[in-house]
Length: 113
Image 1 (cartoon, rainbow, N blue to C red):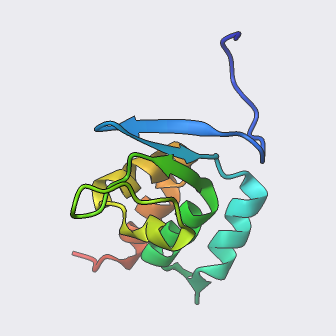
Image 2: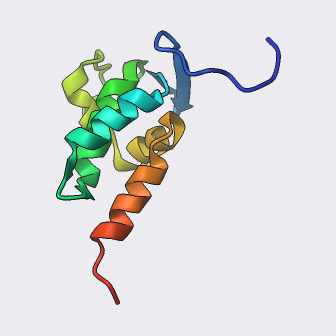
Image 3: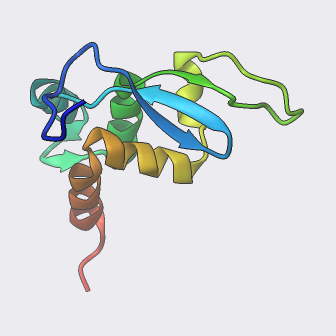
């Protein structure tokens, strides 16, 4: 495979590996990102947690090696994406290209000093 910038494709399947687990995801194209931003913005303020949830639900398309509290493998289900540990969600947000929106929302929603 040649090196270079890869276009964002709806059918791409990228892999994030951590601690023996694999999470399969796709990057979020700009038009999808705009739609998610619009749906999660009220009175000009982006709801960061709702935006993160929506982005990850769109981007995460599967996994292997995700375990429950008893150490048993958990099959991928869309409703379980939000139960991934915060550190993993943060890394995935970065990988799918949504980190800038989350940071801007946090700044906009934080009290001024």
